Amino acid sequence: MVFVELDQEPRFDFGTLLGGGDGLDRSARWLAHAPHLPEPLVVTLAQMAVLEAVPCEGDIALDTLRERHGPDVLAPLLASGLLVTHDNLDPRARACDAAARRVPWWPPALLAQSAGGWDGVDIEARHEAGLMPSAAQMVHNNGPAPPQEYLRQPDGAPLPLDPPRRRDFDRLLAQRRTCRNFDGSATLPAADLATMLHRVWGAVGTLALAPGAVAVKKTSPAGGGLHAVEAYLLVQRVEGLAPGLYHYLPMQHSLEPLQALAPEAAAALAHRFVAGQHWFANVPVMVVMTARFDRLFWKYRRHPKAWRVAHLDVGHLSQTSYLSAADLGLGAFVTAAINDREIEPALGLVPMQEGAVAIVGFGPRSAVKTTIELDGLTPTAAALATGAP
Image 1: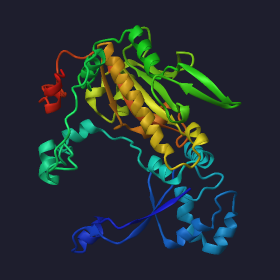
Image 2: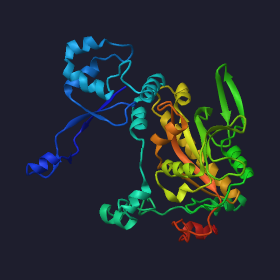
Image 3: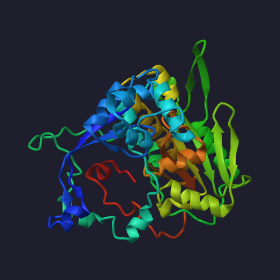
Image 4: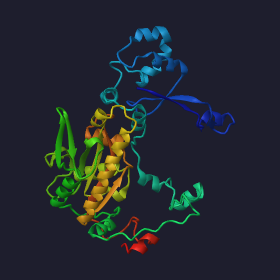
């Protein structure tokens, strides 16, 4: 599968700078995106004609393409891997291409999934290099953010509601917050890990809908009853568990060991997994949530809404993780700023068949705050009116 984009964005060109210009190339170009390739490739109209001649299913002889289009037009397509032969791709790219063909993706979602991955992003390094603007700089550069209160009828009179009932659940919700300061020396108790895994990702039961079609029930909702989200653990400091990578089995409530790691290697991998967000990297355990696209699109074949369902499912699970952690007195976080292109090979995933969506983590909080958290809030009028903590 290939997508072609007309790119008209100005880009730096040293040649135009040497020629007395402003250093920008404003010429239009065509970019070809293919899910098995890490970056889009510049293609000519003649090369696009070659791609048009290749059938979606089955093969075509290279000699036939050479005869029709010429070897000079074909050579860059073969060298880049945009034109796939039986021997010009590495195994990982070939597996990705095969999965993209086999799984009944909705094509725009396939493009978003393949083009939106990160590899080698280090947010901490970008902060140190001054490449991450502060809130004040963003206001200066972009103007004020859209207002926090969105009024559709600014001149209208809102209808007041009755005060909400206060229950224990409200206190739990008030304790839910993102932790950015974990105790780097603390070990997560085994009982807390087991409780978190079962509460959030453990299966409550199954229902056979037909031979070969089984729905799953967990504590969070999931599109179509599929629960096509898997949980992979990166353990750093958990009682009774060696540092390393694990896969949680929700039907059995057990762990599959995938790879043992030295503590230093686990810490380095955690830092890369969360794209250099050092305030998350020292958490005792991270859980990488992946979407099994083959299971998802098995039911919702080429459906334009299915890709959204995977992200909704991950959001439901992350909220359950937050509430469970708050109940246990643990700090928690969720982030989608992850180096998914590094995570997938580390976990042995087949891209376009299974992909990392987000990471959650949980563990004891640090008594010292070195990174800002949402404390010392200004109460809203609604909070003051209802007596919320």
